[in-house]
Image (cartoon, rainbow, N blue to C red):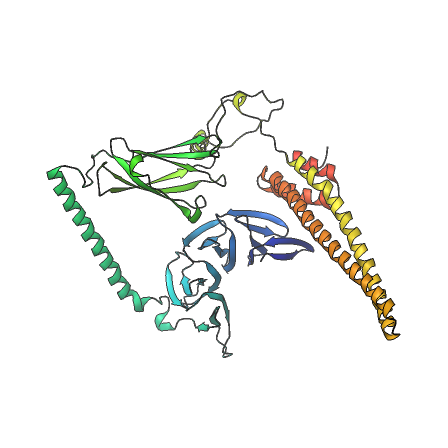
Amino acid sequence: NNICLYFSGFGKYKKITTMSWCLIYKKYFQLLVGSEDFDIRVFKEDQIVSELNENETVTSLCHMHGSRFGYALANGTVGVYDRTARYWRIKSKNHAMSIHAFDLNADGVVELITGWSNGKIDARSDRTGEVIFKDNFSSSVAGVVEGDYRLDGQVQLICTSIEGEVRGYLPASKALKGNLMDSNAEQDRIRELSQRRQNLLLELRNYEENAKGVSQTNSGMGVIPANTQLQTTLSVRAATEAQKAHVELSISTPNETIIRAVLIFAEGIFEGESHVVHPSVQNLSGCVRVPIIPPKDIPVDLHIKAFVGGRTSTQFHVFEITRQLPRFSMYEVTEDSPAAPAGTVSFSINERPTVLIGFRRHSHMKLVPFSRCSCFCVNVGGNVAQSELPVDEFHSVHQKLTADMADHSNYIRNMLVQAEDARLMADMKTMKKRYRELFDLNRDLINEYTIRSNNHNALLARLKSVNQAIQRAGRLRVGKPKNQVIAACRDAIKSNNINALFRIMRAGTASS
């Protein structure tokens, strides 16, 4: 469930609805908030000082040491950040039920302890993500904490399962200090070498079969021309009646070979972070087109694997290539020239031309004259106007309903006294009349409560819309001006100065 936090800083209280949170102390307190919209936000007092974008709901956060913290996502990803730089991350098919920071190998640096939905417990290095310890429960992990469970003065790592099993782990002794996996290192190495041997034998057998195929007919054995390679292109496709607007990824070969199947791995784009295209035998060709709809304007690496061979091949070559989906890949310059905008903006950029050209290439943006560019209008004021006016109405309705319910509560109290008096006096007729009135009044109270609940939910939706408009206005600025605009907008709302709120969003200041 969501958590409502009231964070106190220098006399200011800020209410935050969040999925997870933790505090980092470094000269001052900073609040980390993980939200359902895939962001990790860093607060100093009531100001957002940084935002980290992830690709799934943030379910857990834990402070490790200094400015370093661990996180877990709803899709089974766990990792470590140091300030705004991500050190590492891993993804599992299981869900991280709990994360905790604990120095299990006694090297003076805490590790990230993760309890998984399949009952696994693992400890990973905060620097590399390498597993230094693991254990297994028979059921899903319920929680991971630390404490002096045995009351002997030693702090243990305490793990519990959903079936009630509790295990404690002491930090490593001096003999095992720094490495808890040595006891199984030899067995793991033997298994790894055995697997590599099997893979090499299989690869050698394929080469031998291909060599036989060359001496025979070239067909069926997967022999392809030496110049075969994967070629990829990205293009924007407008929406049609049958399909939404999307980016089309075209994967092709330069000769008569065919692509039997394509596997694409990408975070935050496909469900399960992977997508498989497997054309039917009748539709085999040297080109496969994949529609992609990125949910956010962020760069994403597409890891592509394709099975390539001849039309009658039964064995295929695996080609691997990585292509980055640019930040603004869903945008395209229109051919129609819009009317020239009435206003102009002049600004200077203290960057070398090569930096700007590199930004254009990586962001999939075309440099065109301003006369061909559309005018970007940010309609934040209209959104606030539509949201702010009903907010007052919701507040007045809420106050009226609260007052009515209070009156009804007093009326109920008096009716109960009258009904009990009638019962004691054996006046059954009056008692039944009073209880019927109580029944009707209770039904009215339930209806009023339903109305009040719906009004409250609608009020929260309007307030959320106002807050989103303020955040969009802040994102039009960078650095200190961004924080100033957000703070000024909140002050305008507190003082109920809607005109000043509009001016701040449009011009960055309340002065006309």
